[in-house]
Image (cartoon, rainbow, N blue to C red; front, side):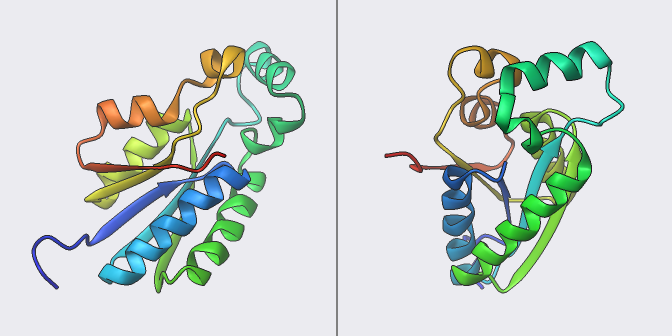
Amino acid sequence: MSESAYRTVVVGTDGSESSLRAVARAGAIAGATGATLVIACAYLPTEADDRELSRAQDVLRDEAYQVVGSHPAEDTVRTAAERAGAAGAKDVRTVAVQGSPVEALLDVVRREDADLLVVGNRGLNGIKGRLLGSVPADATRRSTCDVLVVHTTG
């Protein structure tokens, strides 16, 4: 493997079809470069501050299952691992991480000593974005490794 090849690729998913497109792209890159793919999903603990949890569930409505509790996050990364494998990834690990999406992804990047972070371009608009932040923008600005923003919408 050349020095320019990626060794560890991290990709975040929330279980949405858009994020699974980013997972597939990350899987293809990891497969082509022989890199390890680490798929991460952030979640809020179910025992979080009741007001914070209630506010998140009110804002997210039907999508709240994606960010509350570790069991949905673990299901999400399992599904994503299947998608990544179908796209060509050979060495796939999954992790559900407690915390906000950007903090969780950056933590995984640091722990895994990743050299590529893959995120989808779908930012969260309106109140969802104010509550959870814009993962693509924040991750790109704060990451210590290369970031690939995959066009996953439209």
